Length: 196
Image (tube, rainbow, N blue to C red; front, side, top):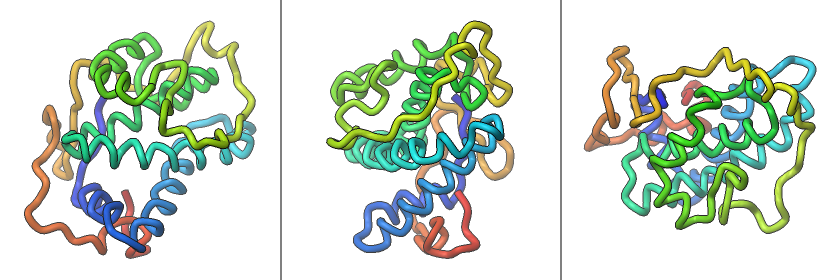
């Protein structure tokens, strides 16, 4: 998958590991991700998906932190959460929201199979052990879209590794090294002008 990475991503990572600030940043990141993906959805379907996406992205923040704690670089830990989201989009037939084509689902699963198996994550169960005990809200599916999937926001051909576009537009495999000094105030929610 191709993702972006900049100083704000590293600031978010640090902020999510801090007491008090982590709750603010987590709420902001969840809201931002929900809004970003809802903009890709058909306008008539957006609000019926909001509650599920909020809960889903909230759970993936725990996935992200666990992946980091288990030694994944920032870009890989974040990509894991995006793969989870794409599994859920696929399961609901929300192909217009997908970031990679349907035929690359298995490839993305295979790359993180060890992590996914360890935490009970599968294409059919995208949250695995990170699902809240009470579950997350459901939203109407559009399974008919799976018959001839259209995914205008998907970028194919990046299933063999994590490809990271930096602030200068350069794309490299694996991402950038975390800077020695990270300004946590750049994390979304800490400074209202910051964006992920």
